[in-house]
Image 1 (cartoon, rainbow, N blue to C red):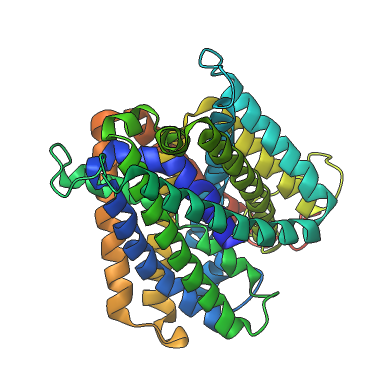
Image 2 (cartoon, helix red, strand yellow):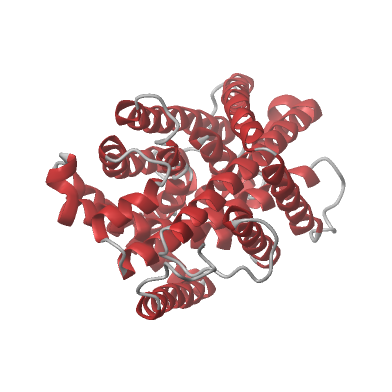
Length: 421
């Protein structure tokens, strides 16, 4: 499921966004992002091996910080970054679907199609959990095979010219490149979904960590090959111009109209399955946080149990983001929230759990430093070019931390609260 979520959001939604910042170095940005994700994965692998459970990141945070402000706020940052990922993939679905039609003047269809996908994902999640797990397993193989075909075919058709790639880019600064790396990290964050499977995987003390490493490795190879294929068929200006649907645009010179249809059809399969899997994982995470009494919960006279309520809340928030934010800003918010949460995970392991899980302090410190450098560069780029993202991030972070602090102070013990029982 983690691989499916990564591929659904990573390559289709982010290739053009990363090329916009990294210029002709954009394939390298995926490689550096994989290195940062690899250091990040170290903490999750150690935690998953020591504490395998269905609670995943929520349980890890509670182990590190207890029932505290840090646990609640960081868990909510992870929750919202995953919802942001849903809206990112939903809009990507709408963007790629429109490439099948002459609808350049009907951009309102992009959020409309995204909302339709989210509503469909809601009903599928209501019907069957087993179906979702089977669908994620099957479509993960379809995505891997499809991306491999696109990459190898694109490289072959281009004659390995690499028009949009250069070892000496003219206009890419260090800050912009590191900002691209921050977005690239979003392409790998799906591995965190695997941590929620500790209660279901056989021999979780070994296999959860292995699954994380394998997923990151597969995605790294696919992302680099696809980015090389895109750069071989389009100039950097063409990639940036079509940054919301760059894979579809790259298929035109390589394969013609049939290639476009194949790429769009494949993108639709990838994004639909990615949203369904993400809604399943995120709503389960919020239900876990609710049962742990770390976040506030109200029934609002909704039918069903807590799992149903968290499913409704999750899809509703994703719909709002899909309607009001474009792909670039959705990806930016997701990157900021995720990297802050990631730093919190590493610090918690370093400060409180290092000996318990057998973690190496040097690797943990390296992971924190890499996150801080990448996040700082990304924020600097946004300060220069898109202050709306900065203000939205600051307001959201303040609301999460202040709201969580108030909640914990007002609800020291909610055992008798009917909203939780």
